[in-house]
Image 1: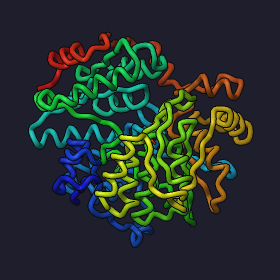
Image 2: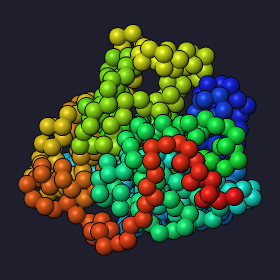
Image 3: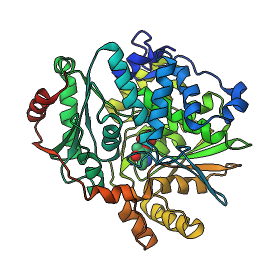
Length: 454
Ligand SMILES: *Cc1c(COP(=O)(O)O)cnc(C)c1O
């Protein structure tokens, strides 16, 4: 399989390059040149375990990884999950939930990042290279990335976070990891300060090369690729086409659903749910992409105004017309506003809804009262969005985090203290270690110089 850049400015590259580079040099995002069709194979695919199905799908895209290594990588990645079938599908009356939160950090990002860490290690070893991952996090991504690469050969990871401004649990999920290749940098500043430092370090191309710096953000194609697996897996559990409801921030998770549909998975429609940061809901309803100010909500992993993965959707929507895509992206970056389709609904297979804080709390409470099932605030956004669609047939809501990751919102909504998980409780007993640094890119850079793997 070869990969092209959405912006059309680079020669096609192979999977290993896509994995290690993350973003294309022309500023675009990588997408495969084709989408293999699975339609003829449903009956045989139905019988496979999650990890076997993952192999069948991932091997179509990661064609330059040898099959024995790929099988091992996928198998090992998914044995870190607490459930045998990795992503259990729970059905209580008309509530259908795909639980994606049984990985090491109890959030859906583990599904892809457990695979990614192992893929990185394998490819770096075969190429005789090393990688130092630098990231900035306000919460979930940092811990899932650390869990994916901790203790792996040839990889260092440096995660910046705003000191004292992430939740205690989120901080402990990062700082209690004691592997030598993991560095938690508590920056005396805001999340924006962390991102500013990140950008200025990445913009120094010479330093970036010298330090073999890389990123693990949600634009890496390999993450989107792995996520396709659970959509196919879940849709194969039904006798009729299903609808998925996906709580959305960066448009990564739902993009994988769109690609599963392209591969022929029996998916009827998609429901996109946002919190008050509703740029995507507005876009899908009106055709207009317009930036707003970021608001803090109960679902912090979706407090995003610019969805980096949307570029991939727009490229597909424009049938691969990179010139039009580049014009659209340029207009948006200059004016914070661009129109893809005048007064128009973008895609009739996608229903989009904005779910506010009151409705989120109400949904957590109602889901508990009616079904005895506890959802976290991100999942609640998807459940609320699902309740508004007119789609026929089963609607499967994606549960993207374990409720115990957000105990305050959940316990408050149900009026009882039920949101807990033994692994999170155990964090409180562990030794934590973080490196406090001022909000100063020179200080961060000196720390990197002294601690990178080379
Ligand atoms: C990251 C995250 C999301 C949003 O996923 P996107 O791929 O950015 O749309 C939703 N819920 C949780 C719990 C997350 O960690």
